[in-house]
Length: 61
Image 1 (cartoon, one colour):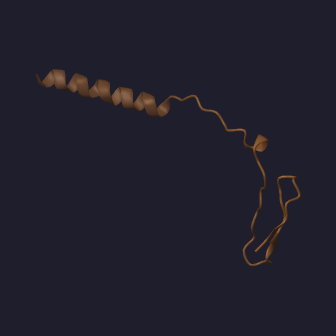
Image 2: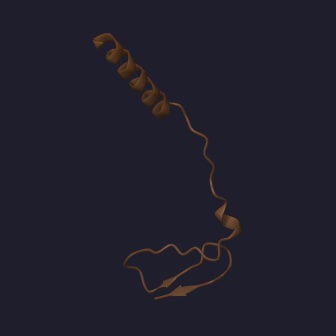
Image 3: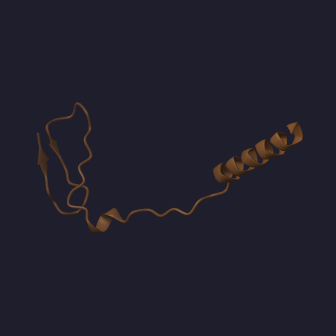
């Protein structure tokens, strides 16, 4: 019984290890198609910000 539990534990640990180590398939979302505006804020430098998306939407706080 003790040997059987050890084998099951090793199998479980092996499966967990493979799930963590082996790369999974992933994809990046193409946000540029749906991007309206991208404002990069710099703390402490005024109250206006430039639109980095290319849509020329200025921001003002």
